[in-house]
Length: 230
View (cartoon, rainbow, N blue to C red):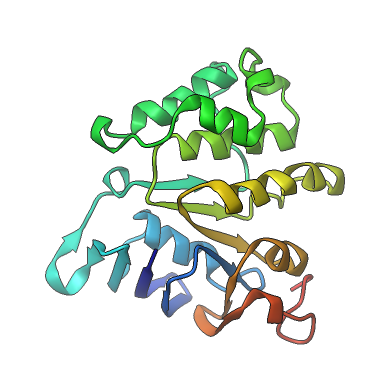
């Protein structure tokens, strides 16, 4: 599983000039608020079009501004889980999950509802209305919905940041299951050292819109540059 990204763009006063190439399954994008983490993953997802850029996932060219290639976001086969779950409040848990499956092209569907329900322990929640769920349950459903779109890449943008400590501890084992058993590359955005060290194999550190380092997640440390409170 390979990922190659190059992006250069300006958004107001913010400049992004980032490059990375990795073959690892779980990549953490790490850095302080305002470092450009979300902008980078939005470029990958197709939500931000850089002035110049390249996005290649497992040999599939999703963006190449030099060649005039820019695959629309809905055709990139990228699952995106945001800080807030963004579930449909008028649909049940099961209906939210099936929406993800419906969104996948029929010939690209690789994941079954039962598999995802078992991986994330969602079957007991199927009939529940999403406003009745805890924050941790909502994020599990959001992850399940993204998986059922059969993505080639899963982007998790600080999925635990809105949860209290207890809910984070509730969701973390499911993220580890996802890492160990789901056949999809994961880009995990976070500024929390403990999450990154527990989940990722490789960490891409960012600051001021630039990639400053790419290293094994186990080498991430709490100091002036690797700060949980950054």
